[in-house]
Length: 426
Image (tube, rainbow, N blue to C red):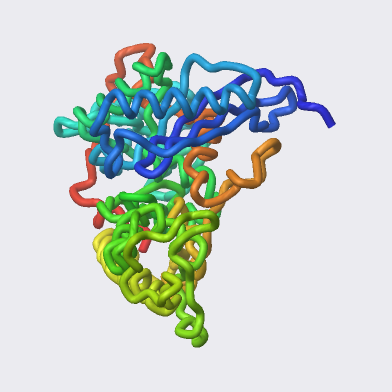
């Protein structure tokens, strides 16, 4: 079956600390999303989600998008970019207006959103997106579209995602220097949520752990929207460094050991299994690895011990973040793991034991043309960027008021703390 006729094309770049990946997708005339091309390369000039070398980052971004363009057979001039660092922060704003029991019209919704826009207080940060998550009618939650309904008061919950100004400008400048226009910067937890979470999970309550190379983002969804976000400056690359340090080997060797023989769950036979430090065709180093035998092989049990030790520290931080955001109730106990670090064997079982909650691995949804190598947790955020772009969600900052409203409203403003917002659902 040939490629369907494409009506719209989207370009996306996920800027990670381990890899920079790009994807070009199209929307067919029937509304199906088709992956036209995708590519990735090792990250350069990025450290824990921040640009540390502009020239190197620009080169890597240009290289990644050119690889995707070559496969797609087309070029893009603008892209949606994902960011996992840049001091991401999430808040919720609540606003309501008096309706007086009459039928809600489109103008009422517009006035409400314009009023909500005025309550956003970024406190010196840059607002990435401010989107209505759901509406309320006389305090009742979960209304997707209030038009045509009757109410005394109409309210809205707005999810606001912010980032620090300077790091964000560095990200956009790196992309623009690669001769690309930035459509928007999307926080990686938002993009990953589009790819990995079902609408029911977002409604009931779910915690998503995005296990990246140098940053782990812990986000909390409930009531259909993202309620809280905590970034932990630790990731799978720190596990690689711990392996390299423990055995006195090179980083690339430690990365291979982690991916090929590493596991988050110990096995009774691990102590009998010896893992070669050198890969096929590699010359042996002048010195043997620490704890290695004469053939430069290390016990798999020791490799697993280093990995589980690092994971123990990370899950402690994740547990603190979840408790801080109020993820402690009886409902919404599901945890979803995604990101490149989630590809480690046995990780879901380890995290389930550490957090005491059911855990599953989140992957990109089935998409036509998506290569098998990119249908993995490490590319969930990239696929989510394309889904986000195609959904084109409403941003209240782009709404223009057709007339000056005189309707009074009780703006609760920004929720004082994310914990208070979470408590409404947990």
